[in-house]
Image 1 (spheres, rainbow, N blue to C red):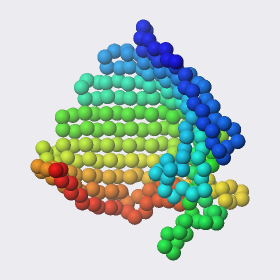
Image 2: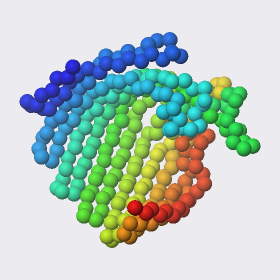
Image 3: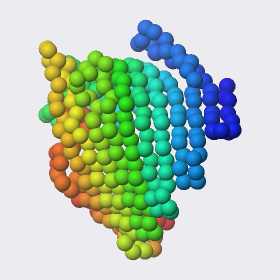
Image 4: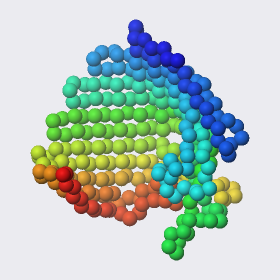
Length: 276
């Protein structure tokens, strides 16, 4: 059931009921937990939000394959339990500037964590090369993350900056930075003329470590920080759109997972689109 009201604050309180039975897991997955959402409008330009939720997340092979096509083909479906407590503040300054900040506490059980798999007998083949797939194991994570965003809206431009500072740690490996400590993203959109617009995107991700489980003892591989810089220019003329895209302008080595990365440097692509 759900209980809602708006006397002093706007609130919505209910219960989340979920059940999963996975054939390759001994225990059934059952969850009954309150779902709480509280919203307080301080003024026309600012508000506070508080929420608590806990849910079971089902990860099938097909879902994960879309995210990581290098996944171990022997992976079987799994369920994790992920709880999040969030406190957020939102403020608008005039007609152009807005600011959002949140503090989040995460408590995740059996969360999927990737590692490079070396000892699989049937390694994936690509031409004459052998590819080691990405294996997955479950780990528990606890901790806080701080997120903020800043937006500047003009008639001919928009600037969005987002950053996250992460303090979430693995229970099994508390001294290892499995999740990047810091992420920062900037998107700038400029309408240069009635026909030409420019979109610039800068994305920074800090160092993180990956587990090499096939070693004895277990070792950890450092995945270096990187800045992914992209620029797109679009020209519209009647029913036609011409585009030119610059990718990874700084020619950084961009890690996706341990052993999987993009080190091909800068890229340039031209596009054409016609609207019928």
